[in-house]
Length: 624
Image 1 (tube, rainbow, N blue to C red):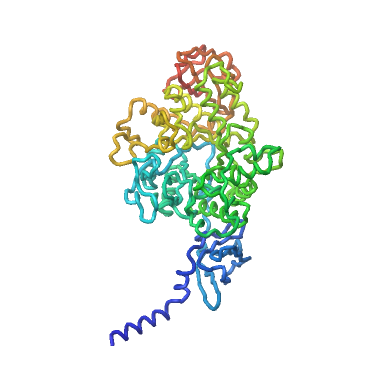
Image 2 (spheres, helix red, strand yellow):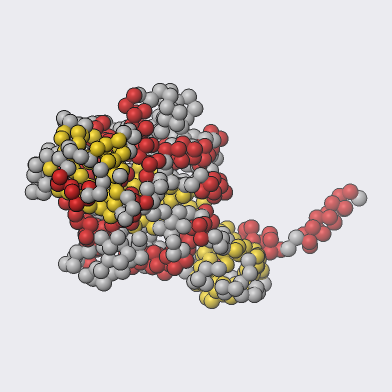
């Protein structure tokens, strides 16, 4: 009798539970984006639906304001692309998508949320900000429980420079007071999305899931909480994105949707890395294709943005993360490598939906004309139009490094000036850019040697470099650990360049967060950077003031930042000895001022006569 009752109960439960629920679990594995918002200006939404033989199904939606414009099947029967039209007045809520084939019905519930109406939710960074660049795996380990995660191919190996060391989102959250106290107002995080690769996955640039935070860092919700907590401390978050390539373990790779989802899909070819082919008026089509379509390495398949389905997918992914997180910006990795016409559409679409949002592109070249080519408002000879507001100023970084390590009055192998004239001439070429003030300037980043190493561990030159970056036009970016003289002597290994931040791991003998164990030089460097960063926070003259510079002379470079209400004089003395600076040459900018305050030590300085400039130093003077 008991057995009969259990059987009867089971039968009743099967009648109560909709068949579609059981079927959905076995048929539909993914729907991306996982949810969306009402209120976007462009009302079309692509849904990538993945599941066994899903292309055999038709789809219907019965919900006010939402209709299916078209269904797209592809080579693989396990994909179905739905294009929905979501009218602007559609109310947020859930709706059902009904999939039908051969008498079988599968229902998928989809959530439509309300976009955040607050303009500050997605307000981008600008030149008033100072950006702290963090490689999450190497910054701070706040949660040991996610150091090794079941199902992830690579576990913890802190002893290996190229291994995973355990830094995570919790560690960043725990460090927000330090970051804010240093004077940073934005954080750029190297990618946090899933990188489920066999090895060398810590850097984050081999995405294996575009909609999922790597569980060794935390969760999507933890990412969003971190952004909110950072905002509460006056810090915006910039997300690192890659649309050029994925990791070879991305779930797509086991079942590619189309024959042209990837470039050189059947027979990978490596890129030439010859950036100038994108601007070269004489470049062959072969060379252009080799550059944009070639793979970085065999573990980074190159995405084909000329495939319309791929293009829509990638653009929607960016919009999804902006709205979901409330970002202050996107740093786009390898900006010139994807199809350049797609990048125009990507920037246009993001600008349309988020007019105050900031995107910064990586164009790693010392050629200023090549950088300017990609900036919004540039009048390109070939008619190419971009909507990209900002780029990383690699030419200025290279000029600064060269200026500080080469002799004054020297000529380099290419015939160009060495010494401080190199830096002066680089800045003089700002006429090439539509908006040089929108560029991001930096002493170093995660892909190059630490600036202290680049400057042969000369502390005086380090101070000059930091003063320049934090007082020059543009938005400054400092790499984590640069403030405490982190270095990579004798090696260019990225694993060493991206060493662990001292104090980010329990038991570290040295702690940069508290200062315990730091050398005198490290503490001085940290205090120096902190002083400049906190000083510039409310200095509009540094954020947006004009630049007037004077030709370097006798190892000294002088420039002014000024507007109608304030003026700052910056003196860079590269000499090994204290130097006398005669002020008569700067009369056009000093007229009306008699004294100055030395920002770095608070002392009062007379402008009547010569200035004594300490050896190997920078002097930052607020004029009165």
